[in-house]
Length: 72
Image 1 (tube, rainbow, N blue to C red):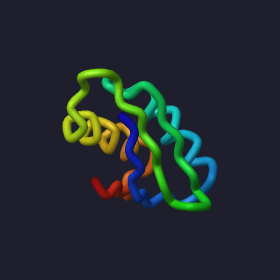
Image 2 (tube, rainbow, N blue to C red):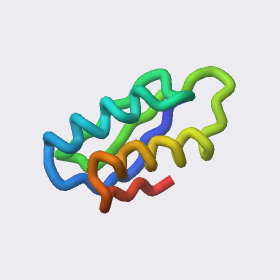
Image 3 (cartoon, one colour):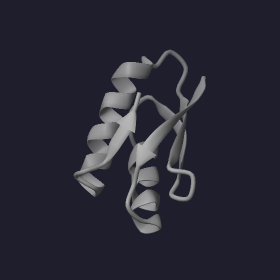
Image 4 (cartoon, helix red, strand yellow):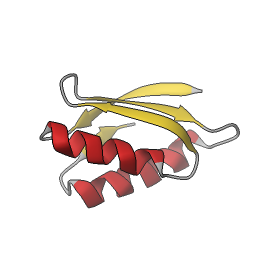
């Protein structure tokens, strides 16, 4: 399953770092973050709980950019 979320990211470099952090999160099969569109597309691993995974993704992204917000 794949979903797109609105994300608040300040620069293209941070977007790249958030993308890498999201990809390393358990339950994420793939992720892309676009600074230009302020969107994050997440491909969930089979059987992964979307809400639980997105909480972990947000936590990982906040390590990159503490004021990051993801609407999920």
